[in-house]
Length: 191
Image 1 (cartoon, rainbow, N blue to C red):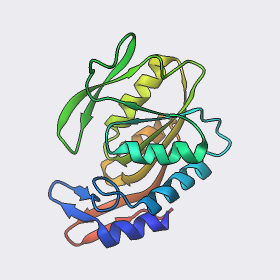
Image 2: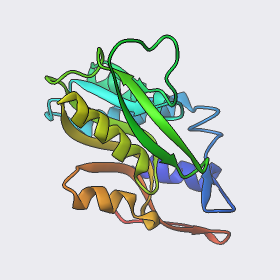
Image 3: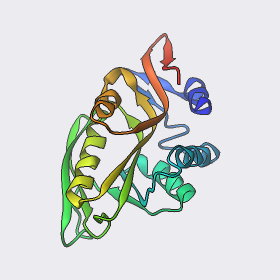
């Protein structure tokens, strides 16, 4: 998605540790016009795939997942990073390591929201080493549901998570794939 690449070049900032700051348009502050286009593009990419629900992880992926869910006309479910008192009954859990926060989380979703008859599309803002998507995939398997694939706003291709998932047979559609980034700039993978 050329628009995503242009936005990253115009407003993204490379931080130490190969962190890409996109808070001005994708995370902390959201460019709603861009968000709507992201949702439409994800819906276009997965048109005809039979997606019945979108699944993401809190919190930065929620807006993108909601835009995709609205464009596809399907519900959005998000995995919480901690079990809270309002998540009761049977739950599905998986362990996830966050590259950005260098922390481990046990993500949780109520079994009420992921059903065996569901065909799930995973959606997130970033794909780096793939741990979040692997954890979300584990929830889909535990629910007995079907994984339709994954849609990502920005993939850090140089960290290998997307390639590892693709090698496992997971369909991964990323709107922008970064092959390299440093103080000198950002290089995108041709799409």
